[in-house]
Image (cartoon, rainbow, N blue to C red):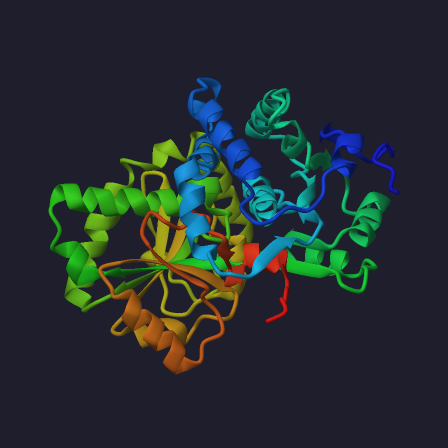
Length: 404
């Protein structure tokens, strides 16, 4: 038994008695799908929710048709059931990440302890209010109470207790967080799914983009900005490096066109305070000494981008946020991989062949890149994330052999 009433812990949602009565279920249980579907409807019809695009995105993801699309990928004959209790450690800087983590664990047949981000976010409050409203329905009461959402410090003894009492953990965070939590004692069959801090890139064909009409160009740029600036460019899937594929001449014209169009969309994601924070960050972190020529820096409205053929890995985390990008021109897809490491997570692309990129990754034996998606799909969450099938990982197969 564990104590959720210690001074460091605040439970925001959940009833321990109801929670303890919940048992593991088969994957994609109908009650879980009903809960997510009803949650989706409530949020999509909420005027308050419209102020939070990330909450709306999660609600859209929870649609019954979308969950059933995922379910079709798990139609094997094996009987799969949840592992039991899953402890989630959510990242501090991405408000709704915890919700996807919780939903995937529930679809895999588990109940969850969810450590919420330490920062307060209004969309989390609305999420919990909506879940509480749904729990009043008799047919949803049990599944709606199959999770406890709480806040506590990383040094809290509660995390040690929950780790020892859980069958699995999903840990999102930086290396320090991961190492600290890995040091806690676990039961012998415990499973950890680790999603550490990573970075992402975009690849854009200069020739293809230069030849687009106005409407098509705007659509490409809109999708890029959506990928990059959601969560202030701090999400692991946010592109921070932009590789232009093509000749020098097409690169120059395409680059000017591209950045001149971005100002039409940045105000949806960045406000003046973000711009000030970015410039302050550049002043303190400074890109001088990283091989960047100050003359190559361009400022277009609320974004900064600079050219440099050498990637400074230290600046990726420190400098590339709130609309700051490094650009590199390459002649072939294979060149993209030479300066990257295994920490690159997602490649968003336009005008290049994903199959050719996949072939280049395979031929190079490259150990990074787990996702290759079109512009606009950087944050499309699927049951397979960072190369890990979360549903299959958080469930077990019960082998049954019948007499012939």
